[in-house]
Image (cartoon, rainbow, N blue to C red; front, side, top):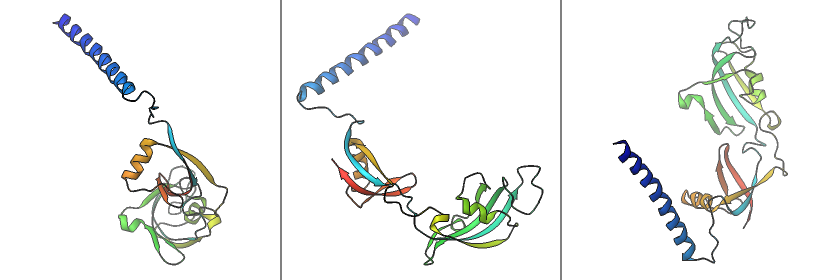
Length: 195
């Protein structure tokens, strides 16, 4: 039985190598003059705006402190939020025109974070610092206190492979100037397309 298993494994390995070799030779003989592009080769380059999507916006927060968990023994003010406490807040985030951007109430879930750990923009931390449980506060953050002013020099070249372009187009994104592309931090604006 062991001998049969060993022969079967060896046969599978050899047939796999043979099949890959045939496929590679076929690909090269179909059009030997055409360069084959791999998924890692650059098909086009786009220049994107790397300013935060909320740069230059004034933000308004209605904050309610729901819970405080004391992290350190020297944090002695039981009902007051101190540095390094884990807190939970509910909030409504709007712009100065009153348009709502986000709300923890809509998700029915508080926002947990550790004060002064860099998890929030610094001025949000400052607003919550010193609040008492169940206290409510309205805070207006200027662009310099939130995501900054727009900097025309903040741009970056991004190289897209043929596969990237195909996936973006399949998701209904157009790759041309002034359109937007999805990223982990939201959509970013395309400033220029180079082919």
